[in-house]
Image (cartoon, rainbow, N blue to C red; front, side):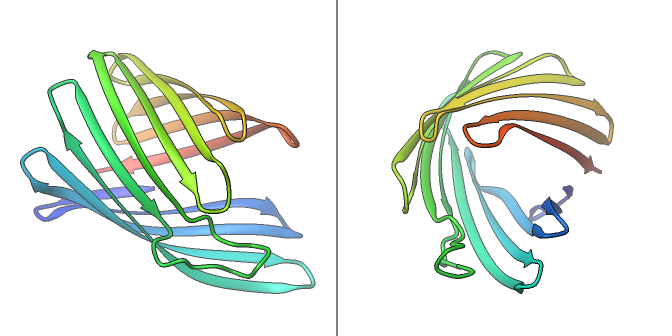
Length: 188
């Protein structure tokens, strides 16, 4: 993911891929976010999904996500999001998730952020998620989280060497065991 600040907000673009030669999912994103009024920010993201299954072919579809965050006080923010607002789907068995979420972020001290949200995927039970981010100094962050449905546990670490940030994350999965992720962010 790479982002660049403009006078009208920040524009970011990124690519994410998972899978292997027989089954691969690729996601390309173009995102804008910015201040709407004092204390309220919003964002809009366009996502291009590509699915490739060996001997079955490929499919492309575009989805739109929106969200907003309001700064309630110096230490508290609340937000909402709608993912896949336009209802994009690849097929009856491979729907792109559609969800709505609402959450709160509390920063009791400058080094610690505690977040909680509830997310409702239209196909499944709602999920409650709780996360912590601890940053003892500017270039280093530890994160941990849990979610209720399906029950999962997550952890991660981020190290910044300006303008690049390296991310590593791990999550549990009932069927797959541990799932690892690696990311690089570049900010001008």
